[in-house]
Image (cartoon, rainbow, N blue to C red; front, side, top):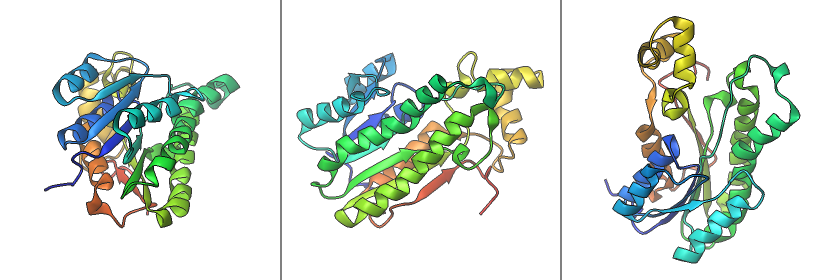
Length: 264
């Protein structure tokens, strides 16, 4: 299927690993011109540059100026922006809400919500003058599910989901579609890296990290398909939403969690 993304210009935030890296790779495979932003340029990003010409910009997207600098880099290089994927986000598990001070709330919101606000503000003037501009926000099922150990992250993602609706309402009549993807657990370094959620789950269950993410997590979280989501599955959904094939889809949030969320 031709997704009609060849030569489109896509900007992806937080693409050094995990979902963001998979999205950058997917757009590049479709022939898009991809610019990504990350504080560190990983070997994987260098590989995408060598294979597809992906441009990796070292930038701190949690700062006030970082997202705008990333968008300007793409515009300076390609003269336009067709797609913005706001993927950057971070979560730090803690025992209780009472353990999170104002500085930590600010850090999580700067990375998870305000980076998307700033990137969208910088990109929209360019998206409004192209044919079929699109913003895709990577939210989370945590925006709707209570999960006290990451209450700050969950609140930021809820804000991102709300931002999606508001931007769609304002800018869809002017030709820019805005949608969100809400993944459940995804097999990424967020889970699989040493000290990540898989290790924490394994310690509680008395098993290995591999067994935790393959079996314990799906069972304990009520994932109907019996497995966590793969990063490329989120990327495939992002490709479709950016494509003209999804031309009448806007203001929508697509859950990809293997059936974990049971509510309507």
